[in-house]
Image 1 (cartoon, one colour):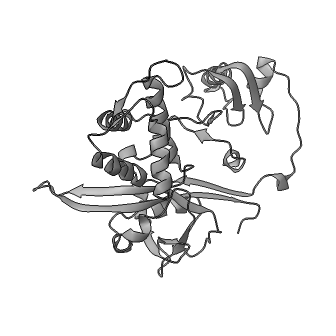
Image 2 (cartoon, rainbow, N blue to C red; image 1 turned 180 degrees about the vertical axis):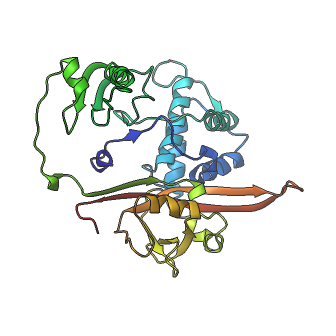
Image 3 (cartoon, helix red, strand yellow; image 1 turned 90 degrees about the vertical axis):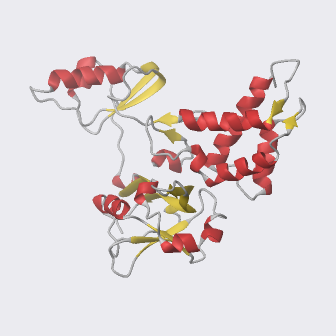
Length: 316
């Protein structure tokens, strides 16, 4: 979270992102492309420029995470056609562009921004290597039964670094001493670090997908962009969180699972109050459901999935 505050991109090896095709931005683009299905872009037309022009025309921000993914797909397509490296640039059809989007969605890939920081555990880092590695030295167990396995784990984490390793710890670490690493004590006053930090990337399961206000406010939801500020307010019974826009439109509600997730981190409805900017739009999710018997689509609307970043100097 502190890295995000400094505008440093982070990512995880496993995350709860939704499929690309389930995102409102992607649906808008696909619908527009399908209307020009027979079109072929000539060698002078960039797919990237076409995507950027579409998003700007439809009021989307080019900094939205999903928009950036789609533009990266377009940029890769242009490279494959020969832009920037070949004398001859191949034409490309709308069908080929759509196929690339569908394949990206099926593979579950993700684009990483340049200089992104991977945040992961020591176990999950096995088999990987990085130019620079920062290892948190706190928390390794040194009792007799677990010391050897913990020492091996510490060694694995250390050797992920190809060029530079930095070990940070708030207390003496036996494995650091045994490794013969040089240490430097840095004094940080408590006021330099936030006292309250909570980080939630919510998923569709954390939101009540069938909420009536969600269905009634589709015109509002469809115009929201990723990163737009939201408000979470306790309901009248102080047992759930309702989702509002800054214009006071109620557009959703957290599910029991979502409310319980927040409670587990000390965020209780009726007791905790979110401050402006702490809740934003993570995704605008395309929710669909088919009838088990007929196979027809019985539910088809968009749902706002929030993200929460609480980073305060006081616990209030």
